[in-house]
Amino acid sequence: MILIYETDATRGKLGPEETQKVYEKYAAWAKSLQAKGVFLGSERLTTAGRVLRKNDKQLRIHDGPFAESKEVFGGYWAVEAESFEDAVEYCRNSPHLDYGGMLEIREITACGVKPDA
Image (cartoon, rainbow, N blue to C red; front, side, top):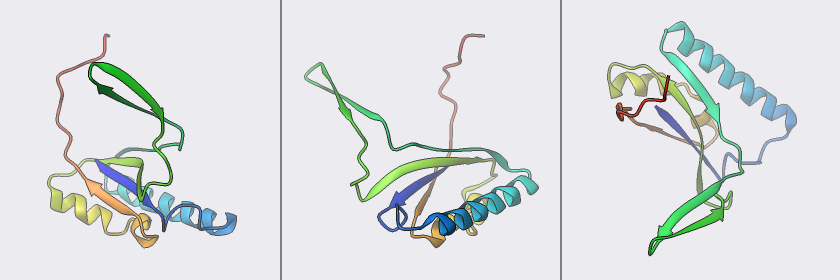
């Protein structure tokens, strides 16, 4: 799983034309992953959300996460890789890195919970 973090450098700094060019670069990157047969999916998160925490057995619910944070989890790319080194190679050409963003590569393991059929 390639986790995408947006930073102050990547949020709200581009105009509409520049934004369109960035989307085109992401599309080209996705097509390159598809051509390699490793692309499994991708989603971008919206800015709306809720943060839940339990304190002294009491559930607290807050609006968030907030865009004022220095780094915000903005979405993911799922790829199939044989190793972390392969995943790093897939990320080298990510346009996200060209705009000051950060990528985190994590291995996914089965949790044993399956939805009802």
